[in-house]
View 1 (cartoon, helix red, strand yellow):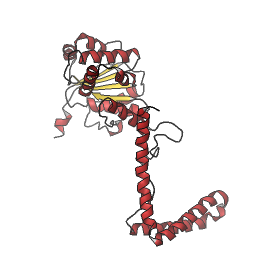
View 2 (cartoon, helix red, strand yellow):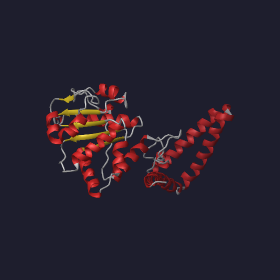
View 3 (tube, one colour):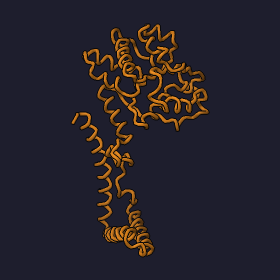
View 4 (cartoon, one colour):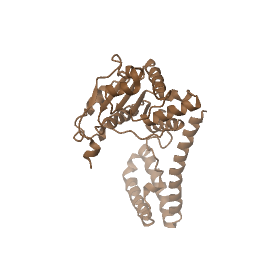
Length: 305
């Protein structure tokens, strides 16, 4: 078992212990009340009889349903007197879909497991991970310049059969990062492995690799289904690091037909000046490039003030 797998299993075990422990403590507290303890025994007995009658004695269902409803109300009333609810007696899992196991009943990985896996992998290389946005939360009136439906259908719907390079260009606050996060969230729901990194975080990671003279962790960025590099151009350019490692990542991803999505405040000319022809030719390779995604409009962050 790998160290990463062990960490994730420990993470889910902790979540389950916390949820189940709280429910057990609430039940123990309630059972200390003699009246509740007596009613709870009657509740459990009536509940079992009702469930059994559903399968074996349907003619008794009506009377048992009345009995079960009456004892359940009495039980709920006693809980209320103690400042408790019925829901306090059952585990409140962080993820009710998988009950904090990471896997669904059919054996497939839960979406929360994929998110945990992504977060732990990024933490391995010293990069914080944040939850992605959703197309369902997009305010089309606030950002009229972005056709969310187009990207949800044309990009996410066709993924991974999309251009290898997609560039969202535009001034600050025009919705580029939010749209990229929506795309990441949509693809993650489809089970895709998406890494969303700011150019500053990515560059810091490159510097760590350079100082340690290690390329091992780069595979996390070259093998994922989609790599999103946000705010390209905001990072400092380190000699023998920034351009060289970025080129390495892009070359490796493109050779594997793994797409990259960039957001940037820079135009083409500024990108060429900053990164030279080596990076420019890869980002804007016409054979691999999505249509020019130019974002215009007011700075939404200023508009909200």
